[in-house]
Image (cartoon, rainbow, N blue to C red; front, side, top):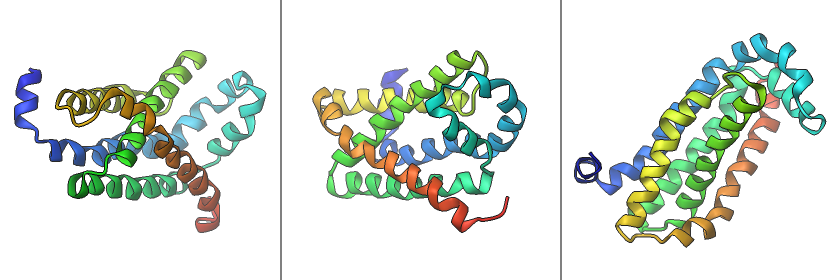
Length: 179
């Protein structure tokens, strides 16, 4: 099966699938964020560690529209990173963003284990993001475009995502002030 995928999906197509797989994952979060928190907040809030209570509280009050602002910001950066790979073979930012998104899968999984329930985004993280990331890394390494060490050294570029998400969540209430 891997041979069939390798021969039927070009590297360029695989690279452009990155922003698409990101959106599929984040659509789950955007669509269900309000409902999930309404359903689970009271039961889970006592389990949240003290240092994370304010983040959990802020997220519980966000709307789908507000949540979509940092997602949109990330999407733009992911498109630019994909373009830079396809058109200029600049892999560093693309790899760093993908490594961070891959690691993000385990935050979703960890949240589900910690809370002992289905958490927001875990389904698409496991069914879309994880397989895509593993295949992307396999393909880039297998075709000797990158080495395993490139995944590690590109990680600082991935930290851009954290800054984008934080900024997006901070400006969202200013852009959309009403719930």
